[in-house]
Image 1 (tube, rainbow, N blue to C red):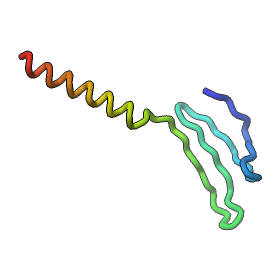
Image 2 (tube, rainbow, N blue to C red; image 1 turned 30 degrees about the vertical axis):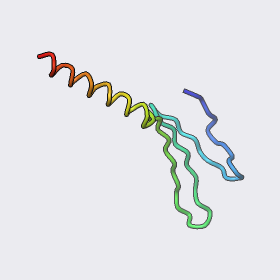
Image 3 (spheres, one colour; image 1 turned 90 degrees about the horizontal axis):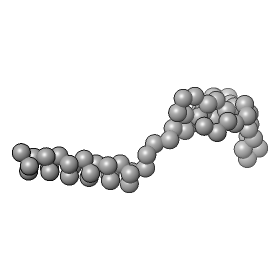
Length: 68
């Protein structure tokens, strides 16, 4: 996993970076409302890859039923 510094500056806004197992969080305090804003980034397989895997599994199950 890419190791980032504890704080980064994006568009003149300072974010605190936290990295966990399989995810990364960017946190900041909103200057207008004073609320904490947290963005969580979790890598997931794209929908095309999931569809290809689904079709392969469906074909496998159909083939198993036909050959019984």
